[in-house]
Length: 361
Ligand code: IPM
Ligand code: MN
Image 1 (cartoon, protein in one colour):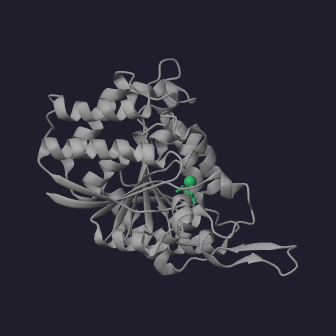
Image 2 (image 1 turned 45 degrees about the vertical axis):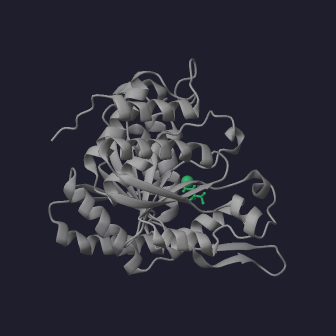
């Protein structure tokens, strides 16, 4: 197949990790006979510096013309340390999610048997953990209006709002996903306090009639934070609002062993964007030490979700597993004998090109 991929590397370690995904996708193209075309676009602090806009129109146009988007990371200490900065790199990511209508963020939490010891949690507690968080991505407190400061500057405010429509499109995705998996869906909310959460419950209750075979349960977010560590195997599909999903997936990354490994897909009605869940990690920028697996596994998600290339995706996964098995990993999971970001990418692309990998049926 031929596919046009928009590449938005962004800031910090974004360019380094994204480069490894491109290597891997090129190897897949070579081995399986596909043509992937990569076109770069500006986003984040890099875009602010060049064109004073964290999500320029040219980037939006590029995204709309592409078959899929590969995203690195945004964020820069220069802006974090200046609370008065009017334009922030993160605004680019948020605006992009909103204008491209990427309303569901899919974050799979999996363990790799090769690196169970990298997790601070006990082996028996995490072995075999496999669940997916569906995070609503374009609503809630991230986007609610009004947001701002009072005139005298003594007060700041954010608003959390959800419409039934926004809630329903995340729930439909989550119910459908649960149907294809272990048929257990957990809605995480704070319905004992928040009106928006009570609306989530109402919509979920009503919808559950259409998915009789899915076992629906509700969990308050504070309890969910505890359950993720105490007994993560209980989960199959979790669905939750924007901010709870943001926080809980960083927490859940501890199960896998490193925030650097986890991928995500942001999906709308037509377009989809793939990005690691980690941030721009500016301290590591340019040092060739960042873990590229979050990005590489995001590329794997692109192959399966956007292009339906299942055996190609399985080949990427096999390459990742081979790299973990061989100890060809970065310092976050292999402190004693780490290899660099680009060596991980080289190892996996060599595996793809040269291994005897044959996919199952
Ligand atoms: C994420 C990030 C973003 C978010 C930031 C960079 C705005 O933390 O993708 O999880 O909060 O959504
Ligand atoms: Mn986050």
